Amino acid sequence: MARSSPRGGTVPEPDATLPTSGIVRQRRLSDQVADAIRDDILARELQPGDRLPSERELCESYGVSRTVVREAVRALTAKGIVTATPGSGLSVGRTSIDDVGQMLQMFLHHGPNVPYLQLHEVRATLEVAVAGIAAERIDDAALTGLADLVDQLPGHADDIVAASKNDYAFHRGLAVATGNDFFVMLYDVLGEGLMETRVATFSYDPRRIDVVTRAHRAIVDNLDAHRADGARAAMLDHLTEVRETWVRHQDGASA
Image 1 (spheres, rainbow, N blue to C red):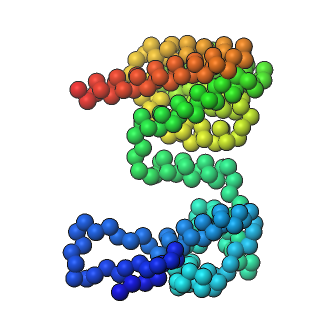
Image 2 (image 1 turned 180 degrees about the vertical axis):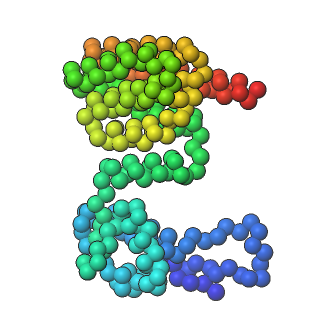
Image 3 (image 1 turned 90 degrees about the horizontal axis):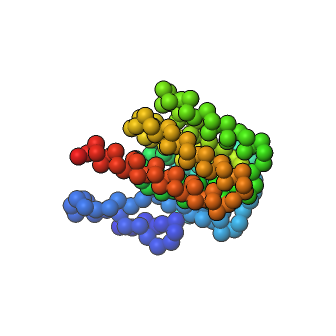
């Protein structure tokens, strides 16, 4: 037996006489419909607020029940892709930068465990570029704020949590200095995910605050001179040392 698929063709029904071990289950029909609706929005280049077909029309278009369509719409609504308004029907959602950031934060906090080194790799790629752009665009107020954070960091030698928050504020300040809200949103997501590792790395060695202070000061010196290449190099050196510190202590803990 087979049933129709929203993407065309048929989806085979499982044979009750066959063993189920090792069998990959078909994706739920509602998930397939949700993907089809999303793909149609992209293909037609619909804009936020544009009207979508009614539930009845979607049922007819994809050859599925109203229950399946409603489950698909609920999934798309939860992601901000579709907006369902009583009395007005369905429309393309108006997702903001904040909405995207919150979704990524939920993934990092509640989704599968993300290996630190993979997350750090993404962070390094982003922050090296951010440092260079910030060097080109930073104004006096932002530069003063970052320099103040560098000066304050040594005073948190006895408070690892405060030192970690200072570190977070410094790196986020660089993203703000670019004037690009997308950099800030991405940094907020990665920064929250890395907060625990910040606390851990500061706890490894009492002298680590001095190491980070020198690294941050080197970055600020290049920002002050508007040297984009120098700022990128200083950030890369800093984050390479952070990675090496993490790996060294993790290897020691597992030995």
